[in-house]
Amino acid sequence: MKQTEPGNRTYSIGELAEEFGVTSRALRLYEEEGLLDPQREGTRRIYNERNRVRLRLILRGKRLGWALSEIRESFDLYDSDHGEEAQLELMLDKLCKRHEMLVEQKKDIDNALADVERLTNDASQALEELRSGQRKLRHG
Image (cartoon, rainbow, N blue to C red; front, side, top):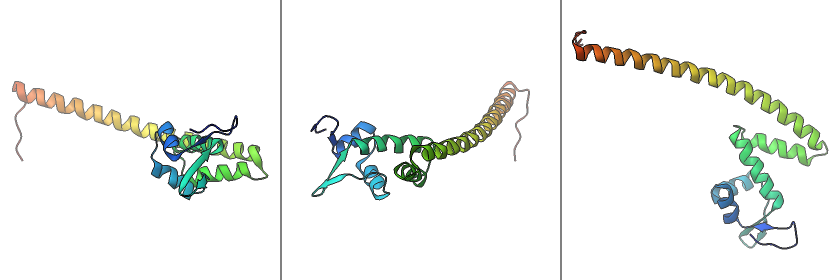
């Protein structure tokens, strides 16, 4: 991390990758997708604080299950004349939809876990019966 004037820190690709636990390749992808815009010194990428904040937001969006195109849409709204209000409205809409989807997925997972538990109990019981001679071994 290079310190210039207060608030004007810059970061190399390696420094940001290490800080956020991502690969340099991921940062280059985010740049290709128009989500980050580092300055260049020859082939070297120089990231400013704005890029660092955007990377944090990209990773948060990914954790929420958003596609890079959805994250870009949010950034584009923020950078437009519509500003923060439009960005927050979009985010609230996406968060509500994501919440609904996760609740449905949780129900599916809970049902699958109950099925696995039931089948495990049935199989354990059948095995105990076989071992104790209370159940005959079936062939075929």
